[in-house]
Image (cartoon, rainbow, N blue to C red):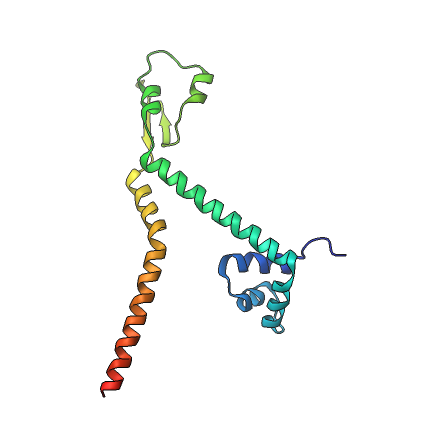
Length: 160
């Protein structure tokens, strides 16, 4: 009985979870002789399908985490950073640990005293969020444009 997937099978699963082209993924994974048949055999196996499903969920969860992080950068509060900067008394390590400094990219203590805090760029975070959300729309609209263009060309051919 088999104990898990070999390296080629793992590569196939990883490629398939990312690209979805069974034949191409099998070829990239090293199944050079009849990659189409190899892909069909691999996809028929329950352990391969389970691994692909696990990888797809992992990728979706990662992109969800990225999106949540970008939302925190774009819309997060800076009050804790300001509290740190304006605090007259030194905060204890426990108090500092409780601060939400997710939006802070850099903290410096200049020679003249005080505290210099730099934040991540909110506009860049918003742009990234917009590009994440707009990907499907752009693909769909380009697909619709291609269909419309094809229909227009067909109607022109009929009129000739």
